[in-house]
Image 1 (cartoon, rainbow, N blue to C red):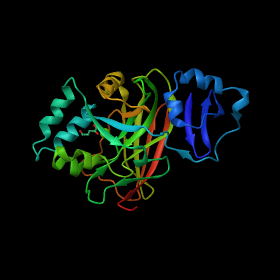
Image 2 (spheres, protein in one colour):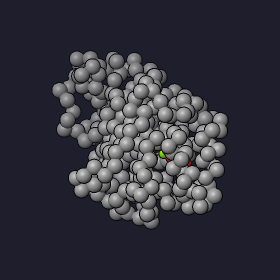
Image 3 (tube, rainbow, N blue to C red):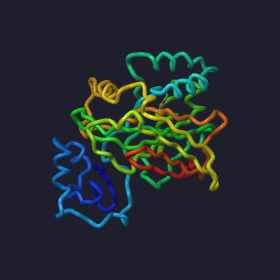
Image 4 (tube, protein in one colour):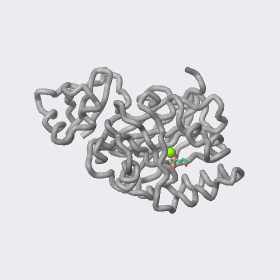
Length: 279
Ligand code: DO4
Ligand code: MG
């Protein structure tokens, strides 16, 4: 079952049919005691609609905070070690990759998140920027994973590489992330064979494409959530990006006008244009 947030209210797509969700509050849905049961009741003839193609698809988020895990794929470890070598940061990334405690960092408030089709931003003071395509966990206030969406953890690699202490500036700024297009409501994580694809198009040409699978994700989603919720309270629930396993070559940097497409089997496709610095 897929849950969409749109400019015309919330909808689910279930077994090929679309239904309007009478509940308007996204936060109330995320906090629901029995979301699957509730949405199954919604999926009746009474709420059926032909489609919701005319409605603008919005980022599937209410007032939740977005957090992110780092260095959860070997590819990310290698890229981070290389970019921070001169700053003496390489060792940190190697150590966190194999440590019991994962790297978790605050990524965005909902107001900093771009919806599908909107622009994501590269910082005006960054020279080396990449998108990071990440399976994103949707977690209710009680720390239970209720679904999965696609996240783009936009990152300024030159700023993060100059000094690991600059990580918040490399990661947290207006439109530094995108989420969508829907939440796959499921108690079980997608299978390890699930593919994540990244495509970056520039002036109509494919500039970069890469693929990974969830089999490469070193940490279990439940373990990441366990660390996130330790001694922490998320009254509206939280979103947790699980890290990137796709890093374009070091010669690549995003540019204004690029199109970023992230596809995750069974969830869908998140597509955004890129702007730099513009408000
Ligand atoms: O440690 C820096 C950030 C890592 C990250 O965002 C990732 O691995 O996806
Ligand atoms: Mg990331």
